Each structure stands twice: as structure tokens, then as C-alpha cells.
Length: 185
Figure 1 (cartoon, rainbow, N blue to C red):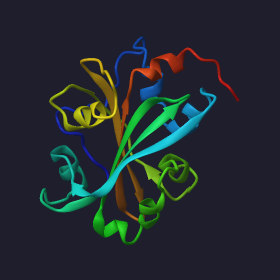
Figure 2: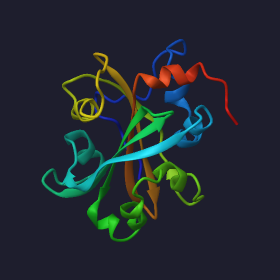
Figure 3: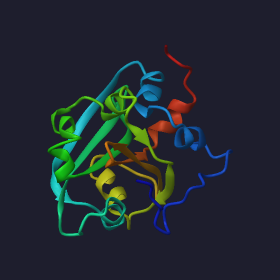
Figure 4: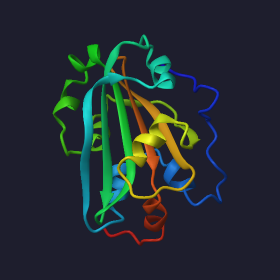
């Protein structure tokens, strides 16, 4: 299954001089990249429950808007500071079959599982600058004391046995500081 971004999600990332360019465009495991740049890494589960996908997600996953999906939200935390707000959406049908292990992850990183299985395929990355009008910006804002006017996000579909799982990663201000850190490993 391939997908096309809606008119707001773009295939072209911000300019190479943008401080988040390398973070946004890296196709490897974001979890591994974060772990390499901080002394203490953790995943903080924020929400995992049946919910409606956001409008732009429902279309992408071919979900009827009123159909519930599993929505999993976590903060990827480096040295005690949230660096990324991660939001995953899975059709509940696929949750009972192909992606059933996701429901049991708890505080373990989804990325570690996705990149460990060679049968899981990642579709191209798409990018968007979010502001307070977007639901993901507002969801990330609930868990942080202060946010800038906009946040950059990337998303892509992962497929296993033709079943899609949508992962969106919203980059929080702490990521810019991690860019300046030397690799710790």
C-alpha cells in the first residue's frame, strides 16, 4: 500500500540548513538515534486507547471517520526531558492480527520493534509544520510546560502483511539541544 500526503503533508523536508533537517530526514530508527545522544532514554506512555483517528489520518489509513482505531501516544524522553511526541494509529482489525504486539508495548519503544523485523516496510516520509490548529500540536502541548508557536513533524506508514500502521513523530524543542551533543555510544 502506498499513500499520498494530504495537501498539508509534504514530501520535501525543510531546507538542509534547518536545525531539524537531519532529524526529520533520517530514515533509520529515531529511538536508536535518540538513545545515542542522551545518557538516559525512556519511553513515557501517555495514552493508548480506542479513539477516532484525526481526519488526515483516517483518509490515509482508509478508515471510516467514525471507526475507532488504536491510538498510542508516547513521549520519547532524553535525560528527563521530552524530546519527541510520538503518535501511532492502527486499524482495530489489524490490531487483532498483524499488529497485535503493539497493544502490549507499554513503556517500550515501538521503533525498536519496527526496525528489528526485516519484513516490516517503511513508506516514504512526509513532513509538516504544526501549529495550535492541528490536533497533534494540541496533544503534544498537553504534556509540556511551554511550546513554540510551531513544531515540525514527520510521518510514515509501516506495513506488515499489507496491514498499515501510521507513525507520526512531533519534534519537541529539546531535540535541537540533542543535535549539538556528541554521540554517547
